[in-house]
Image (cartoon, rainbow, N blue to C red):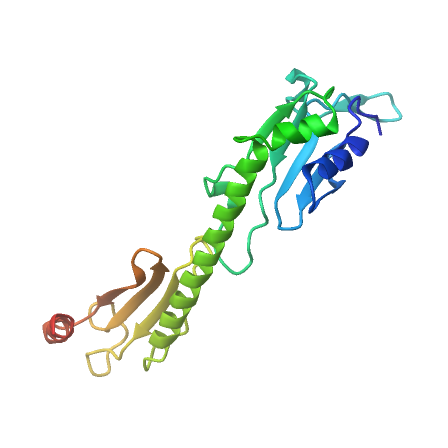
Length: 238
């Protein structure tokens, strides 16, 4: 493994110490010369050289050789990069930090600065730590709200699932969305008739929830008679 001209191995723990209590550093697996500086509250930033001055040669015994290197980094200057790390996606709600629109922060620092100077640069009023802290709070708030919405959404879906003939709630695997779907189908209105779109009452239900509107339920009814439709509308207008 080639070496980096910037000693991030020793610089990262020194910066973590200069940032103050709660901060610690450790190697960033999969990123050569890169280190993670994390706070015990979950905030994490990545520190690495902006240019990785190495490449790998992959050779065959017949003499054929190819060079493998990260794309684009040969155009960067030899600065030290520090940027906020996106949190992991939660398993229980549909949220993606990479598409959330939340800015987790980015900074470029001269590698000739001391650890204390780097820490001071990162903690200035509108610096990386301030941006990362705001992002951390915003992300946690969104996760908490998403979990509240999910609990309400699921409770409503379970309530509807208790309707006789209603199928169990499900989610569409082709869409990354939190909506619960339920299906209901009644008997064909024609004695002895087979299932048909216009003669078999069916309902498609979609259950969602958000902080602005609370729980919302959309019901698509098909195969109704005029009398059926009139009854449903009378209930809605009662």
